[in-house]
Length: 88
Image (cartoon, rainbow, N blue to C red):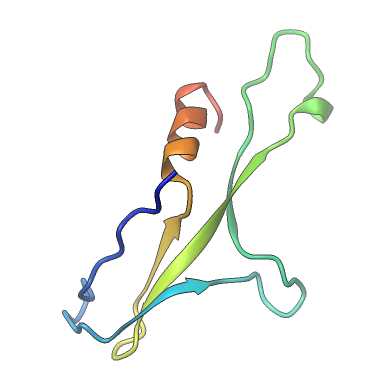
């Protein structure tokens, strides 16, 4: 799977002084990177307990001039495939 291309210039200030890719985490309480999470659709009669969300790591692009941050999913094709199967 390919990573999506990151922008070369900042959409806010048009600077080309970009820092990318950067791994982002949830703060001091966790060392895990941020993730987009999708939960599978509920099957009729199934318990919610067994519906395990699927995680897709995120990476960031930061403008070194204005601080604008963009987040990108590392596996967009996999995320889209799950979305099309009803994951939300």
